[in-house]
Amino acid sequence: MLSIVLGITMLAACGDSKISAVKDSRLQGAEFTFGENLDKIKECKSTDWSSELVNNVTIVTHTCKVKVDEALVESAKKAELEALKVHARLEEGSAGIYVRGMQTVHVGALRTQELQLAQLAMRVADADRQVSAVANSKYSRFISLSGTALRGGEAPPDPAAWEVKQAENLAQANAAREKVLAEVDAEKRKLQLDVDEAFKAVGLALGWQDKYKEAVE
Image (cartoon, rainbow, N blue to C red; front, side, top):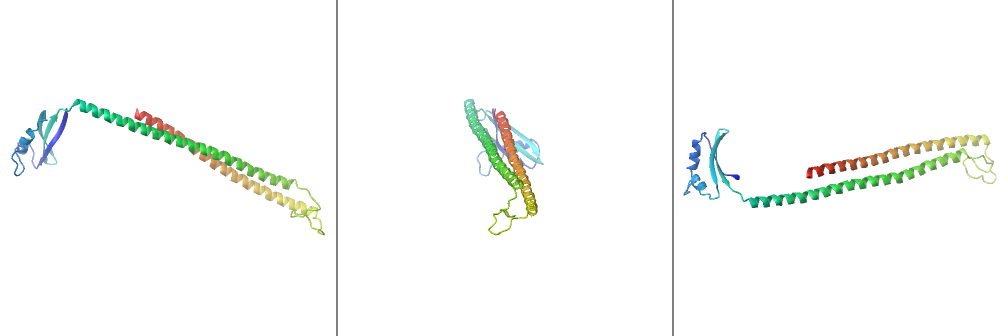
């Protein structure tokens, strides 16, 4: 059974006596009253009049109960259910696409980390070679303090001055190496942070997908 409110009239008074006033009222020029018009509705299996006071205003309601075709109701239910299933499949597909997207981001972050770590390792190895080259350099009567070959007629460098210059060069090489190591450590932390964030996003996406499946079911 379905209850349908067909007409509502508000009166600035209270009491069920107003129901009669509404039923006996008619629009200007109308042949029949409200009550007569509503009584002519053949689809009404049963009718009811009621009134209630809301904010000092009496609201009179006429209710018509009609019998709904059960076949029509079942057809509507099936149509709604099929529409819900289609919507659920689309949403679940979108959830899967989102998860795969996050997994792709994570894989990309891992690959980037791997490539960057290899390049960073090369930077450290190059800095180590620079330090080793300076530390293992030998005094030569044919090499100037600046490390270039002596020209004809130039006097060989003083051994004591060469040792002082070597110590300066070694200090500079070690300082450059420490700077490289600091930059490499900072870059490694950033790369790991990117990987961790991507992995966290995958976990959240998977958890959201599971919750969504439960909600769909």
